[in-house]
Structure formats: structure tokens, C-alpha cells
Image 1 (cartoon, rainbow, N blue to C red):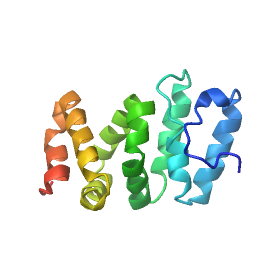
Image 2: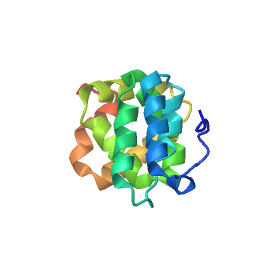
Image 3: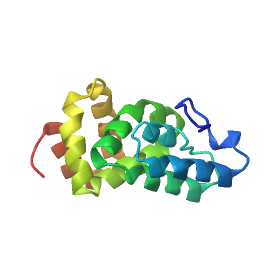
Length: 144
């Protein structure tokens, strides 16, 4: 499989987005969690392929919820730099899902980059004040 790295590959490297889409679909069908960060690394705020970005998020979400949340947590530093708008979209979607929110809340305290992730969540909250209750529950370990 040609797309084996989380180095910022960017859609720009793939003139044929159909080929990229097919490669990502093959990854998603394997359900091998090692592919989730590779898929997320293809998110790009600068691309005109909005449908492709939505497809990537949907494919990543199709994996086991625990594996997906783990990959998102690990990808936050990369996505904050390369695709902050898509990262915000991902976090918004996570906070709309009780299952994903529960896993996020469970895995965050154990994460090696917990403090930076919590700092990002505060920035997310500033931009999305309607998510105050759920973000506070995740960060402060309160009940939903």
C-alpha cells in the first residue's frame, strides 16, 4: 500500500483524488488501526476537495471507537498545524457522539500529551461555547 506514512502527504501530492480515495477506502476496509493516523494526516484545510475531506473523516470514524479516539488524540499536534479547521470539525463530531465522548474522556487522562490536548480543548471551547458542558465533562471528568 503506497500511503504508509503520517508525514504530511497532502492531497496536493495526489493529482488523482480518485486514486487517493480508493487507497484510503482499502485502508478503511482493513479495519487495521495503524491506518487511522495515516488517513487523518491527509486532511488539508487548503484543499478544494471538501467532499474528500469529509470522506476521510467518515472512514476514520468507521473504525473501532476506542482506536479512532486514540488516533485522534495522537494526531492533534499534527492537525493543529496542518488542518486546524478539520480538527475542529472532528472534535465537534466527537462531542456530538456519547460513545466517542466517553472514550475521549476515558483516554485523555492517560495520554502522554494530556496537557497540550486540554489546552487545545480550551481553544476549541472558546470557538464553540455551546460545547461547554461536554468539554468540561471530558476535561474535568464530570458525568455527562
